[in-house]
Amino acid sequence: MSENKEKKLGFGSQLIIENPVFGLYLGICSTLAISTNINNAIGMGIAVTIVLILSNILVSSVRNITPDDIHIPVYIVIIATLVTIVEMTMQAFTPDLYGALGEFIALIVVNCIILGRAEAYASLNPVGASAKDGLMMGISYTVSLFVMSLIRQILGTGVLSLSNPLTGAEIFAVRLIPESFVLSFMTTQTGAFLTFAVLAAACAAYKNKVTADDKGGK
Amino acid sequence: MNLLTLFLSATLINNIILAKFIGMCPFMGVSTRVKSAVGMGLAVIFVIFGASVLSWLLYQFVLAPLGLDYMKLICFILLIAAFVQFTEMFIKKNSPSLYKSLGIYLPLITTNCAVLHVALDNVAQGYNFIETCVNSIAVPVGFMLMLVIFATIRERLEGNDVPAAFEGNPIAFIIAAIMALAFTALNGLV
Image (cartoon, rainbow over all chains, first blue to last red; front, side, top):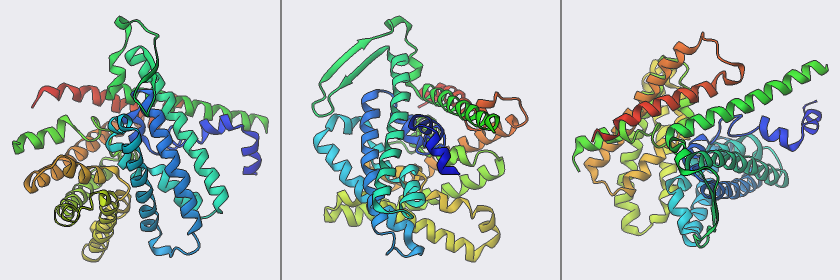
């Protein structure tokens, strides 16, 4: 029954309804904090996706030999190790991005999406399916971050820009809104909360509509 | 650094929730009732203080002398998880009534990023022991303050007519936005 429903909904709809950030409110700390520009959002999204895929693979491969009593500490150690690896790699190869994301890379350890997927999916399913689930969740998270940072960057600075994470050189920068019309509060904390509220409400509205259609169909 | 300045700036100006967005999950999750917000706040003050001071000692006397700086993330998170587990067992044995009222919030604190944030921040800022203690108590006090204010507003909001899409968490984020705006007024305080 539920499988049929999942098939009926396209990947796009699933992205909105089962969105880990705006639908389930997981991993909101990092979403609010680093969505000031799209460079940070893409960098953070990729870092989280890599940790998520690898942690799902590892958790899934040790699922049958992990004693039930200590499964949470085991998962946390796996995740913390992966995050340390990602953190050091970023420090070495993308120093600018590492500087901009700062502490939030270390805080990936306590990002609820990762522990949540380890607990709810990877600990119950085979390796291949868990890796795929990690990838899907990672993409949803990255897309959410990207949409939010796109809105905040354009409204807050008026400029859409992207730079190369390896060298820090700018790839392109386009001014979309004249400087005297930008809403600089969009880059502050207030802007983050407001953007989040509106996007979460949009997701909820879409979800309400789909459920209403479902009921109407039957 | 002046200790009072440190306390005020960690509690109000660099408030962990409104200025740094850390600890958002419990901020949204347990803020529907003032009573549970107070319980969660007290539990967080205790755990952050204990775990951060222990992490600082672990770092200064074990990790730093041995050059194991890169192990701090793994060590801190294990220490936090162990500390939470230990607190839970201790409270359960010695004060069953407190355990009943706090019980459900305690395990949640392990995945509260505020705990890890304070532990890492104390080391990153190079605080000495006294500054570590002050910072470790000031940050969770700021957290509790915001949580209780926020819960009070949310309780009042309950019977109101909110547009369907904004029901629940979205409207809570709007409140948070207004609170963040109000608290930026304190920026020039210290």
